[in-house]
Length: 246
Image 1 (tube, rainbow, N blue to C red):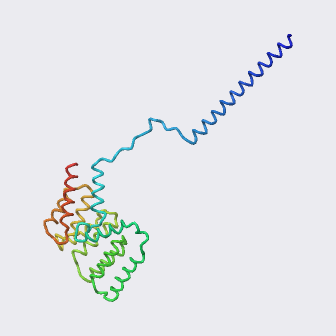
Image 2 (image 1 turned 120 degrees about the vertical axis):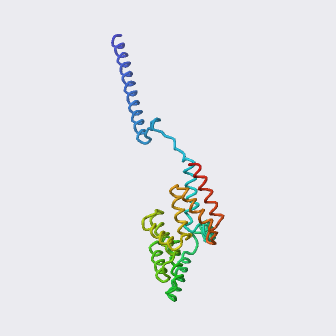
Image 3 (image 1 turned 90 degrees about the horizontal axis):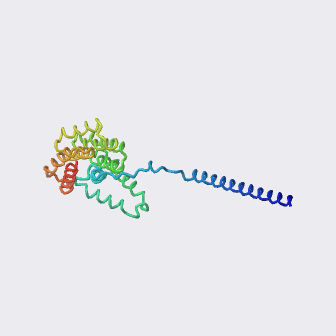
């Protein structure tokens, strides 16, 4: 009887030890799984979570206004608006990427051929400068405008064109060189449209709405055929609204 009781006691202890070992192994596996998951998906403390801050309404208006006034280039509010609108329509074409890319090169080749036939024609050189400026080829644009001025002599519009090239080449920043080119234009014609437009646009970009309004109002009072009055009034009203909000 004693032997049988001792054997039972030994079996109970053995089974208990096995259960404890299995439990410990299970805990070890669970802990390993937790560590593995922690490596794949790191915990983010709630205190570190920050909601994204919405842009102030003024900043949104400023961004929108800058896009409306600057993206079309310095001529966006002049008589070149139809050309700018046509370009926007072209860019909105869903088949834009499938158009013939050689068309642009053909236009350039045709203009270059005209210049070779009439190398003393300053108007053709100015057109070449505008062609390159429109395609952000700033150094070529600058050289073409310089050649036009060499043939035509000092000209307020060409000084403004050179200023426009430098302004956009510098990332829409008013450098000392750009300012000097504008001064050269205004010295010949105090009401030169493109020069005034450039000053107004730069003032608007730097939230100097009073200066932008002053420049645009001056152009509006000229009744120049180079100015699109409706667009100019729209720009002035937008600047006034932003000025009041500030």
